[in-house]
Image 1 (cartoon, rainbow over the protein chains, first blue to last red):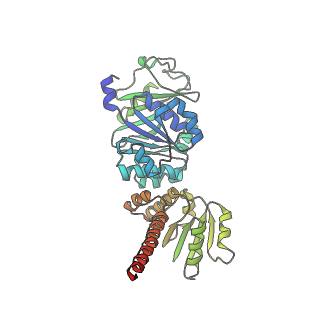
Image 2 (cartoon, rainbow over the protein chains, first blue to last red):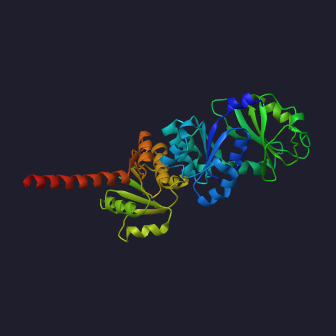
Image 3 (cartoon, each protein chain N blue to C red):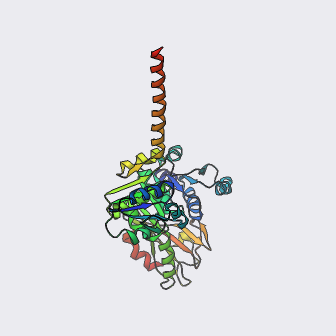
Length: 226
Length: 145
């Protein structure tokens, strides 16, 4: 991606909740050139991460209107709430929407029973962690299964993930040598519990879980090359 | 009337007892912590239900029949708002009220159609009124001199 393209896609993203998911997401988004602010209310966790994340982490409760104001939610393009509490994630997203008309809000839910109500209440996207784990278990049966993770609302694109089986033709290939369908991009690799930020020279290995941003029309082509 | 009260703290328990005095009211009190129900005393005639207010499952079990009033009175603003939204949107409860301590948050959700009660604002108004009264008294007595 050229510098100019990067500028165009540059976003200010607020991530709420510095658990494993929030922390890794923040690192991924920073590596993609976005401006990211991770908000954490627990002082101990904040201290753990502040040396590494510096200005990219903020200590405070994001359901407090004063905090949302202080962190500049008014200019955020995206608010992602990934704490372990469903009610906190809901309220953060709703407050961002009501008070600052944040264009895009994404909430993680831990309790699958809450999925319907979140969508009814105007959250743009939800990430149902329980369901993701469940689909990972199901994936054991179907090695080439592509699991949808996030639907990008108002577009034809989505983020999917898949685990590479040992007989996948992609194993031991560098990303630059893989002929991915047009309108698709490997955004992240999960290897032995670690997030890897892919470059052209990154070589895929068996058991890697790869996340791909892809136009829905190209899913069939993707399926064929896996 | 069927009334569901979430949160059996000082406020929730008092409201439950008061509304329960009218025999026509059917009261259900929900709290995460079963110890809280002791605040209701042994004469309370309504039902108690242990459950988490931020979990849809809690409501599936007790709100399938029509509920007339839903009051969310826990100590946690976020839980109250989410609970009131569930009651309103999913169970179509006509009267839902959420206690929200943060005045700005209260106003934000009022705009979304959630009726809120904000103890901070109420106390502030009451204090101002008490001070105002004292000022009037003083100016009256000044006039006497």
